Length: 144
Image (cartoon, rainbow, N blue to C red):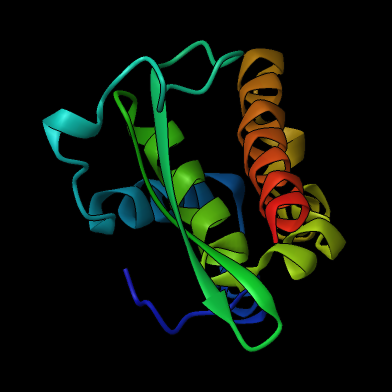
């Protein structure tokens, strides 16, 4: 995955795709480009609760000029969910905790036309992933 890609870049990429099947394939491609998560990181602690598929998110925190910055690695045992993880990390990973809390990641998923095509279970899982990152951001700000 391109580490320099922003949410706006992602939205532009999806605007070129005419139908849901093309978007679906693109999400899977993004998931394939996601670096694999080392087996040692696939722990219960890193597992996202509320996802039907297995999803792991591993966050690291560093101090940035505007406060704590959170960077994530993630993975899933399902191709489409792995792609959703890749999209979510493009939107939120590498940003300050404050910016993460200001960003409506689900609105980005709506803009790129994904949210309406997810099963209720996948939508719930996506919300669980977003909430996990937001909780980490709140904790990082509280600790700062």
